[in-house]
Length: 399
Ligand SMILES: [Zn+2]
Image (cartoon, rainbow, N blue to C red; front, top):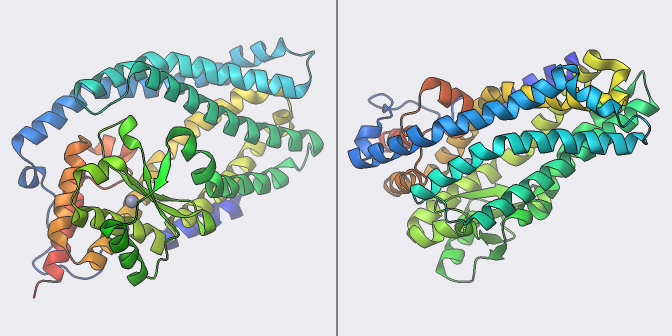
């Protein structure tokens, strides 16, 4: 386990771009300043939005942690599973997992519904309740299948090799992360959105030409129907190797100029260039392998019993939340490097700033996050930080 953690730490230290925009900034780095790049009305609107939605979001998060903790860290969950003692172990595990996750989801549902009401009030959500419920159902089903696959594999190994199951589980866990990340764009993403190829035309030609100039061959550019859910704009690359693709939200295509879309696509090419999805996958695989070893040290061969399911799920929820500051820290630096790449590729900081402003305003981004919220939840730099970096780049490249 120590070796795995060391490998993970070494990879994080080496692979994370701690200085996303290398080099000296003439005149010093620009300080991020929301007031300089957003109107008072824009700042007031996002502040009002966050004041309304934050209590519900944080409460929902707390419930999502407390309910599994209550079921898993006290005997309540294990006792409930004991009632299924006479059934086959697979049935016990499936029933325990469905029960735990269903109770947790139902308990946090009222908070999620309240958030949805506020999202609609601010025009961010375009969904009706039937769409919302269908998302809840699909999200639950996808999460359940993923959880069950991991639990059943680990428990089967623990039953087969009571003393040394962690060796096989570490390998299997890592393999599941790699397989999951590869399959994600083709298996999970279509559950929530439908995609079509960006039709031939000037925009497609320009993005492909830019990608070729960047030595990042793109098999395809896809458009997702994000507008069925939201008015916010986004783009992403997912998968790696043969499953890697660039996805642009239809909301982005509807509202941004071709030049702005090109800057956003250039940011995504930065992720492709540095194999960010692959690095993240390998880091995730090492972390999961280490977690299997930790689980072995914590619970030993008790993991083979279905009554451990609540404990394992509780530990997963709590540890997952506990490591989020670290994963966000890594993510923010990777995102900043993709921004630096976009600036170098397009050499158009003005449009970069315009696009960032538009993304932040349409998404009602938190422009002045408190330190605690920033550390816990920000997987991208804030919009004022991203704009400040563009200004830094501008200073570096001033004639
Ligand atoms: Zn990104």
